[in-house]
Length: 340
Image (cartoon, rainbow, N blue to C red; front, side):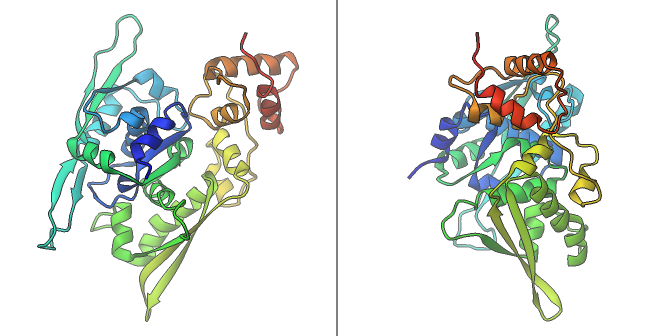
């Protein structure tokens, strides 16, 4: 049987995907669910560690690399510090404390993190961390995983959407399974809803379930549905169904386009924007990188160089990067692109 670490190692060079242990993706053991920005940082940290996530080693990423990620905030040390504090407070618990026949294990996601001093020459900052033993043991033993579209996670705008997306993604490839029924308390736990918030199902549905599903359907390769199940007049559970889209191109265009007006486009009150190629910077961590990896010749070219060469190509032909057919043009161009 394949292990999560093997799958993560095999995909180490695919910067468009994150392999997450299913135990983490389903949030079964998590307490103190972090905020949206902390969840995105967690995904980045696990994706950066890849097949080494179970190793007792220091993992590193530079602040400049985080700032280049489309969909992440323009972080600095001051904004990242509380996010690491949130992740340090995440508790992983295995076992039911109300069942005397079960062993209960309590641990954490993060051991410690270091936000280094700013380099006086480059102006960059090195960020490093050690994962906690509980997480490392879980990752080492894991035989089930979720493969998440990283750019979708970075563009989701609520923690409810991220938590539901990663949970469903861990179930998508299971045989003969295309739906799961959650009791209302299970849904509240999955979303990390505080006890004093959204006490009525109507509130939970309005502020968590429906917005999360609408956003996932808009920005991901999945289409989700939610069907309430009643006992009398009371909603006792909700069945979440899913299917993989035959054509995810609309979601890819939305991820590549401007965030401005995205909610209106999702609600159908504005026209969907066409894809626009970024005017500056690398296309690493974006949906354009996925197109490069799918259509470019091997070895895969550098994403910064590819972006600059394509901009030169468009400029030489007077072709705006916002043209309606820019994605088609890019695919045709990159399939012939050769470094040199």
